[in-house]
Image (cartoon, rainbow, N blue to C red; front, side, top):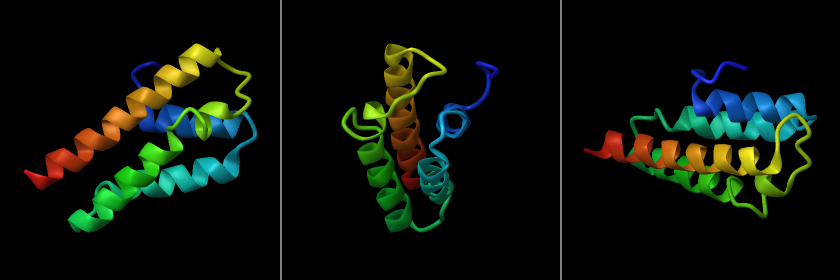
Length: 91
């Protein structure tokens, strides 16, 4: 996977590659909602992504295609991405 690929796509693809298609689909749906014109929908999506990025949620999955530390960094980046998307739309 290209490192220029957006973090949201990288996390979704990594989940799929490691047998977690159901979680990838859920996450992808939340990511799409970050583009909503409705601020409540965006905030809810950001909250869901934040919860999923928790080390005890997606961070606790068995991801074999990358190291545990790289997976953790990807989740942190995704969480920051979601916060930026939410903040950008509100200003």
